[in-house]
Length: 236
Image (tube, rainbow, N blue to C red; front, side, top):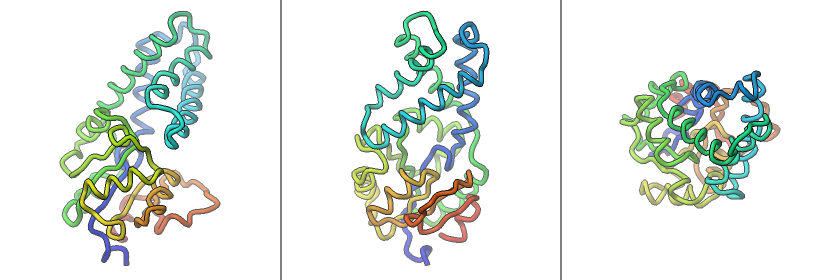
């Protein structure tokens, strides 16, 4: 049983513990209204759809180290402004929108259902750590806004390490930082590629949190699959 072998738990933050999907809706609407984007795009859904499509594309590139963080955070809003016909300094306004978005986003408190209960359970039994591709400063504020920072022993961020999930380097760094071993570590995350394939490739145990019910052709990298965080308690 996995439970008998695990000593160290690594958990992704966004959409595994802290409800990024819902919190980001609030923050995106906030910048849309603050910057009066309706003057150029009265259809908020169009604005949001353009943003999400571009943001997803950029994050996929960032995961594999094909673009730098600075390009990601400036390009996503610059691109949206360009697409809606914004008149002004696209780079400067886009950068300001990104700063305000991240600041407001990190203040939001919503957690994935069951996240706090799971951390309460795990922290009594294991060394619990967050392993995230999110940005320095922002991720710590998310933990505090969600009221779960006290459960986390180490916050390991690709932004600080210089290597992103799913690349091996960040997982190897995490083991050294937490004085852990691959065969006694488990990765819990909602991103099959970044979290689960990445961890599996370096010999960790894996629990894929498929709360969206994604239909994947191959889930062989996932030792276990759950759709609710409550299910994790029965595994470890």
